[in-house]
Image (cartoon, rainbow, N blue to C red; front, side, top):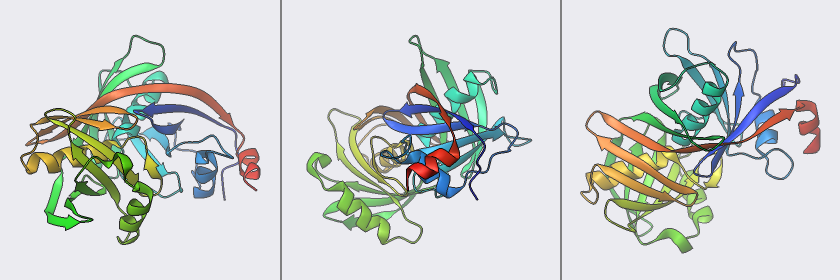
Length: 273
């Protein structure tokens, strides 16, 4: 049953990958999948790629993240969403920058956060953990690699994906995987140590950017010997910097607060009917 108490959320985006963030330090709010779908609906709701609920981390970490995709399903990890979480948590006084830890379903991650000069702006970098690379494949006439970033990815390297039917191909690959998979369509460039990426995210569809997808793409390209240890990944919504090292991957990029949002759950659920 959806929680019907009024909710105060904030909306943020990292390179166009947008999230609604709920600060629930005392762990009192249940994020029902029906309510998450209503909140994320871009026609009848507020609109977002996902919803993040922040609670205190207990003994494991400073904070803990409850992450839901736009379809209401539970997700393990988000690089862009972690930066959104960081901005909301700092604003709420739950943590103090520059460094704090967040418990996720993919493990405990460290965030480094720096407020920006413009109102609502900041820069943050996130410890993404290690990439686990699968064997070389050939799919859809592209060089392919499965990459585990705590969540599953399929990286497909080929020509510039600008004219690719990402919706059709992404849905096809996702549907072939039990539990779904995130699919990155990647090309080299526009310069050295750079990648261009479009992404199909499970539980969401095509998004303007993907942090774990950018990390997966950089890890695969690095292993193929096509890029150096620091890679600029050009997502449609903006550029993210990925550093691939032996002890793990770090994702860096901007985050911006968009709005404060007051929601009556009963009203937003009724709006979809």
